[in-house]
Amino acid sequence: MRPPIRLVLTLCIAVAGCAAVTGQITPAAVTPSGYLSAATASAVLADLPPPPAAGSPEDQADRRAFLETRALEDTPRWTAAQADAELDPAFAPTLFDCALGARVTPAEAPALTRLFARSLADTIDAWTVAKTKWFRTRPYLEAPGSVCVRTSPEVDQSSAYPSGHAAAGWLWARVMADLAPDRAEELLAQGRRIGDSRVVCGLHHPSDVEAGRKLGDAIYDKLTADPAFQADLTAARAEVAAARAKGVANPVCTAQAEAR
Figure 1 (spheres, one colour):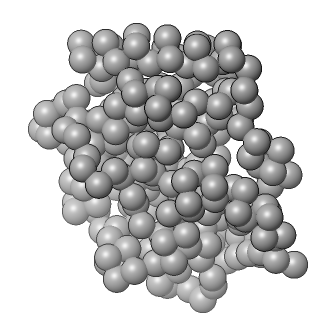
Figure 2 (spheres, helix red, strand yellow; figure 1 turned 180 degrees about the vertical axis):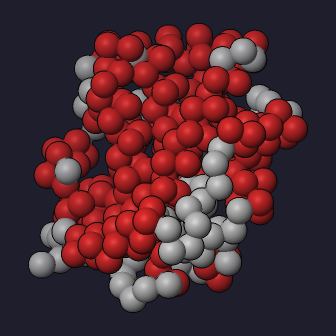
């Protein structure tokens, strides 16, 4: 049964119009420079393993995961995966509202928005090098089955490995956990779900997602040594605390709970 349109719209509105349904990675129109140099960002790939060899047990498990998760089509989890695909730094923080227990808007949190945007730029620098180094065909191009977002030739031709969405989602979850440590468990779980949603969507294999998380961890570790990042982190911590003090919840959280 197809999810109620109200649920679809509610989840999409929560991430500003559901740009996720295009399947594109949609950072802000003008992405600022990252905190790290491009060389530093790409250097984190040193400890990233290559994708599973074709035909290996892990590769076969990845292929089974794609086929098995096609059963989630037209379920609330499918719809939630569409919402989780939003990477526009101006709106991606709303993906963490429910885990945070408060609504944080871009207007009220410029430092947090800047944190998301600049750290995304660093992540893009790293995953661009990784995807060039290790090309892996996306699962939906190798087996029949629906995907939860609209794809494009650009997406079709890009590497599944590692998952950029998983890298950014996990990096941002670690940032949010730093800003609200008392909600760390919930925030990190949301970061993990963002990666898992890429498997649900059919855009990535599980091992692509795990590699993305490793990439996110490596970038986060580099960022913590950067003074500009630390300055924005301090400012964002105050913004998040102020938002939580208001006690205003994101209305999408009820629908999101149904979808999980």
